Length: 233
Image 1 (cartoon, helix red, strand yellow):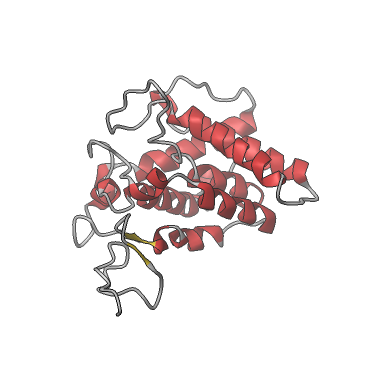
Image 2 (cartoon, helix red, strand yellow):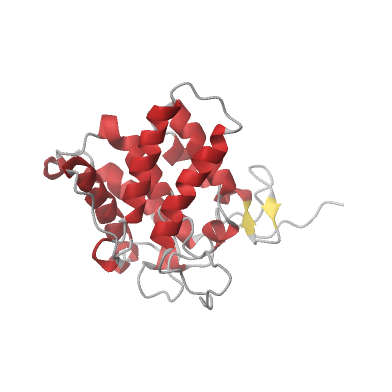
């Protein structure tokens, strides 16, 4: 007997069986992860792209299912929904970076050379936003230390990935991961205590990542959508 396919919250189809399998327990279709297909295609290095896919596969369920803001106060409507709101915010931040890259104001950002750093940082800047440890009393709210936790998580995944993947230029990829981690560490800008790097080039990358995240988090980002929860991309 064919099981009933409920409406998919990600693609608004009554039945998405032809495109992906329904995950009933999460009330999300498995397209929640393939939603990054476009963003993955933007990576310059095939190896970094493979690593990013590995990180997506290892991301905690909260990253896939939770909203970008637990209270709904600090992000646009499309990002505060329970249907992969945090994923939608992440995608929006990457869209902002892609739009700003050619602006003369940001001439110091060499997109061709630095895009893998920026993409990696934005893709996982909130990956542990809801992470809790024994003794934490988050009560469903986001972790104020998620910047540090997410930065460390990315580096841990890289060392883990190296144990199962042979990489010729591992040290070069490590530099990209380290820089992305530094950008994740400071992505909250003035709302965090982690200082920017004293290195001018690194500091510029950090501020650019913060700006993209900041713009994507503004509530007016959702004002032009047809429906309150509609994703504008």
